[in-house]
Length: 323
Image 1 (cartoon, rainbow, N blue to C red):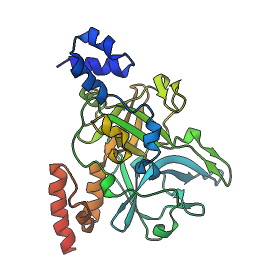
Image 2 (image 1 turned 135 degrees about the vertical axis):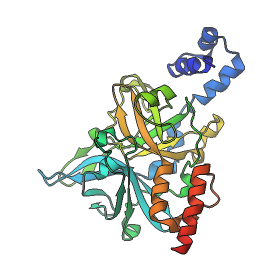
Image 3 (image 1 turned 45 degrees about the vertical axis):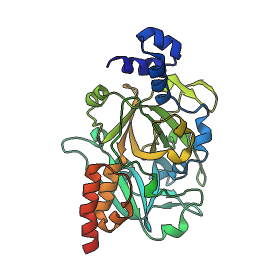
Image 4 (image 1 turned 90 degrees about the vertical axis):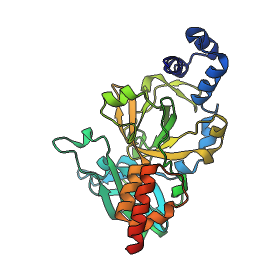
């Protein structure tokens, strides 16, 4: 039915329900349901203030070999599975080599096992539609994490397949253009970018896959700031690569409770000309982690997961028991 995409476009561009009703002739109740699906609470920052996912997002740094100072290059998301800690990020962040994150006393080099997908054959990382990278942190990080960074658990993850045009997602990270650095101090701001999931033709045009990726529409010069309650040009999102992508629940009422927000994906690319931001969904990350650590499959027991991931977990759990 063509009327729903038309309604989504008109509503997301700021037209009220009466205008859209007259424009496309959809009955008022149906249109109200669609509008609820496309709407956030009037003050989303109040929902975010108690959202555990934001507390798990951290800035990532690398060493500037010219000045020997650290420079901000990206973001990461801290996850605990059992007694193991992981930093989820983008492969192109790990490509920098030696990378650092905030610790209890200072910014320290990240230590542990590094995993990432290879650069596509006959291509470059810029053409990598997956861009998965993570670090299995060494055990000493259990005692030296920065106190303001709180790891997520597997209960915070969205491990099902539901994705429809118009679904709302929020990208979270630390844009490096907002970072102020000196030899001994780095000050940066956590920033969120919220938009609706793109239609299938946009995925196809940019060679992404709706099963693996999340794409949202984001025009920097036509964004609305909930902080300033006005239209503002959004900060450039460079630096949020490796940050969290939050899925908002379908039901409008449920969006007022931060416990209903889930980590759906990890962001990695901004297509400025096409006005969209791209992420890789969290299931491929978890499959990579469990494949390398089959003994962790047991920690996903009882969670709602899609069929493919469920079959994968049952196989890996058997391997973990034999490990």
